[in-house]
Image (tube, rainbow, N blue to C red; front, side, top):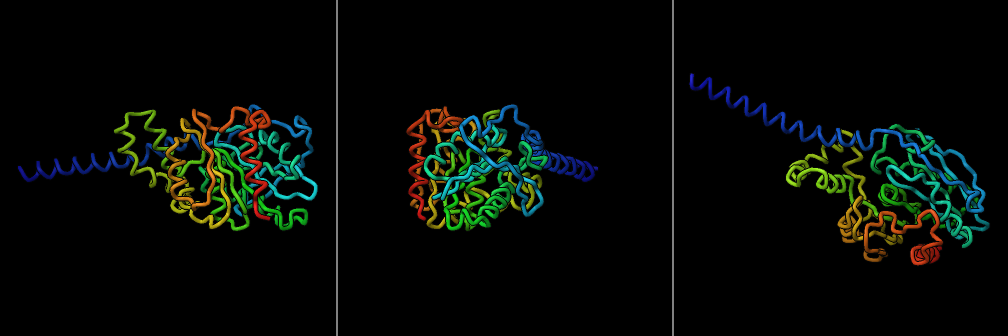
Length: 306
């Protein structure tokens, strides 16, 4: 009788442990789906005409079958081309037309794209940078086959998710010559746990932390094991990178920047501002209003090796 009771208690304990482990895996997946399991539509978009520009609008196709919405602002005899990526839930990448205006004035072409799962691009979910780098590859492939851009440096410029994707893309695509990354996260798992700690008691977020990589694997697939900014940044070699962050960023905490700068090659340039400025400037739609910000970006691009 005692042995039977002991066995029953042990079975109950095992079942409770298994259920708790399962919950620790399921909870992040449910949160991922709530945050990322949808297509992002934009309430506001910008047009090239608002900035005195002309832009060709078309689609490129990724090697995994997604049609990606792209705008190209050409420059005569361009000395560089900048590929621009926006954030996780917005704004529309068309906000970059303000940057494109300044780039064109300096003889620099621009390609703006809404990544998969955004705007008119294909896709029903956001993949935290694990697959979006393929959207960049489709654009780079397009650039490489155009005689206008023969031997022209390709710079990928992203903010937030776009910044993480830019770093991932540079790690995977040798034809990318430089990266500008604003408020990049070092890994999806790290920024997810940091933000979870703000929403729930710290002890619960710490309990969840070891299970988040497994949840990522189940939600995003095997690429979540190897494609992370903290890993891809080590593949830069001697290619230039400008990392920009704000010390009080509440969306991507500053320690992500510290992690990336620690792992990056020694030549990487940095730009830091105080406060909670996820987009680094309060004038992202019209960067001419922030001379320090725009001058930093222009100097980086103008110093790209030809």
